[in-house]
Image 1: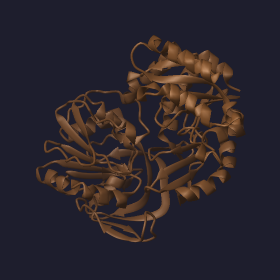
Image 2: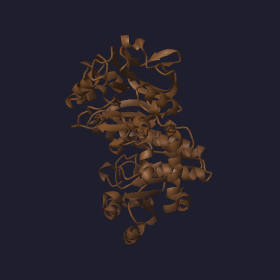
Image 3: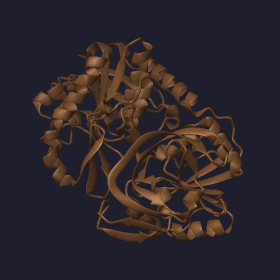
Image 4: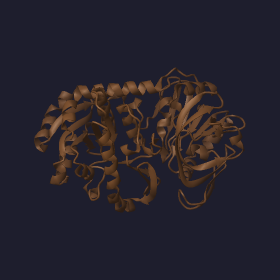
Length: 481
């Protein structure tokens, strides 16, 4: 019943990947291990076995541990809905939508839930590996902190500080973090790691020893850049690839401003027969696209306006006139309909907006959120698939007479009368190898026989081996308390 925390000198330094790799390494050593992140901010969420939601990174880390994901693994999840406000999920359930300043006042009240979840995980496992958020150097956020040193102090959890050498200035990252923190917080740090090194790690020996001498902290290794990272589901939209594959079947995915659950696309990006393009702000949908995917979003109405501001509504209409196909997933499905109603002001001011009009459905947004793992039968191919639903709102209309799939005998999603526009609430569908292959064939693509889930497992094993080679894993495990 021990724990160790990996914190970073900033966001996106590789904490999530390090925790996943350490979790798999501990599992391969025969330990019962679980991941934990006190507070996460992400619109890429996963539905857990106990019917709640957590950050996608913790779901991947649970997979690395060989266990089912659980809401205790990420007791506080913030899902940004605007530039200044976020939905607050506590132990898997939405409790409020607040502005940043309001959350600062709410945050100290959440430490009880955080510690409850942490203690439950510790009681069930030999080791808990904890991931921090952002950086403990953000001392302006230290009062009431539950994500980094505030949690470490409350849980008496030793900390390893990770710096990202790929972005430059790693010596200043680590020494500067020590300089701005107070003595009690610095005392919680037991060592450091250098992550994302490219080239010959021995070239950094002098810098490594300088950090150790200046900080008084023990170094636990220099981790070379892990090339397999792109084969694992990403949590941060900053990690979205530019595309994938160079195949003849062209898929364009719209990068919405509040894109959510974008790991839906990962299996398609790895299909050799698919040429996948991520269409970002200021870009047009390529004219040779075969399938346009409008992915999930944390703000359907807001991102519908964003989509129109990019001119993508015009591109989609032209694409369909040329005989192309379109698929909307979750919020993207809602956008493809004729009308979106928000009578209770769930996403902003109460009202309604006209949708893209390519599916004969209407959607009403409601405060209650559907969170469920789902098994379905795809209507066009008859193939079984598994996925999950995580959305607000209900959709209905004539095109629901042609469902995308059937769930326990009930229609799910919708398909246009000509079969070229499809919508579904099911996330994760393309992780199913047989379904993905059948779906691609049904729309004119050429599947490759890719085994996506097996590839993720193999990559986690490779990541663990990578860390075993370059990190003092035994020392880290011994450090845990």
